[in-house]
Length: 477
Image 1 (cartoon, rainbow, N blue to C red):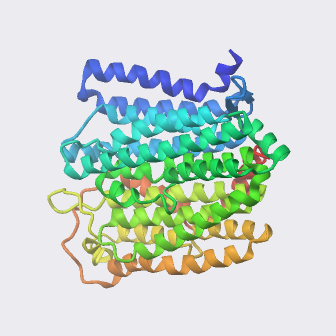
Image 2: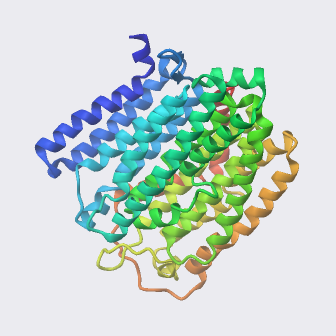
Image 3: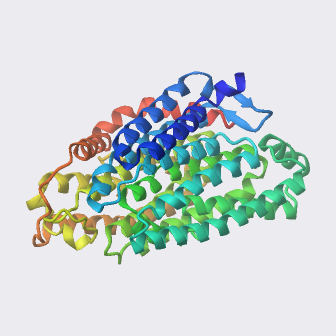
């Protein structure tokens, strides 16, 4: 019973998802809105359950599952992003004629998998959580099965995901073979006692490569632009937020908790992924004409900055990663909410950047919000998006990686170009065909909340955010 209490968030979501699946099968798609709101309530309850033992219980189930502050922090971000992804979906699917009661249920099942990922204390728990999250994601990517782009996105994601899963499994097999255990604590002790052997090094490389696919870090990013463009926009918003947090938290836990004594070895891999992600994300986004593809490269670019904090390998570095991911999901969800507001006079969704021309004169409020998100993603002060970049650069500098912080700062200057291009399009180009003036209250409210959070008012949250992320990071050390 004690073990079950520690896994209360996953139990709430699993049982709730099964009940809602029965309701969907019995009532049909007419219950979609009710099921969506029930899913939101379940995610909120799962978040509230983290207040007790679920985030401070330590190792349970024989060392397979870690209920600690680090996992608790990551789950709060995951559940929050999942709630937003459910709230912004009804109007989209109604317009597209694709209302399905299974959508919020798939989000719940994906959230269960992500919870297992961030709480994994064993390579087998890691894999089970990762696959549960991925199986739901494959269906979500191809959710609009009659749309050729959505079907293509789901197929690409599935094939490349299967490849990454095989790479990860091979790495897990090598780690087990050279350490004699699949538990993170045992791997840590084996590396500390025997050092890094050649076979173990290969195991680390394959394991980190498999996880890099999930965060879309270069050179395992190839699926991201096509999947982001082809998937329904609410699904793309979900992919760009919650799974990124889960995969980044899992990568951090594996690197620090399982491979801690081999920091010098895995740091080289992380630095390579960080720098290449920053450069490719900045350069490849310049020529994009589709806003969702541009945001896909933006997510690759931002993951590179988060990896700079992980490369530090310190408690402050882990804290900076958590700070970065917190602010990142607010900026990203806000950006996708603005994309959902891009509708022509007939209510059809528009994704071309050229359609934003002169938006400041036709929809000044939407243009101002999108400009704030673009400036914040670029890390331009005084918006709050500047602070997480400063945090990861500071952690790298303190850890003796000053050159890496400088390289990241230079990369952020290059990446600012394509964000500023969107702002230039909205404020200085001749107006295009005006967007529909119809406004969704929930979407508008979420855009306003996100804009307030990344405004200079966000700096007021730094003391609380720093204390919370440092407490979460301490759990790994």
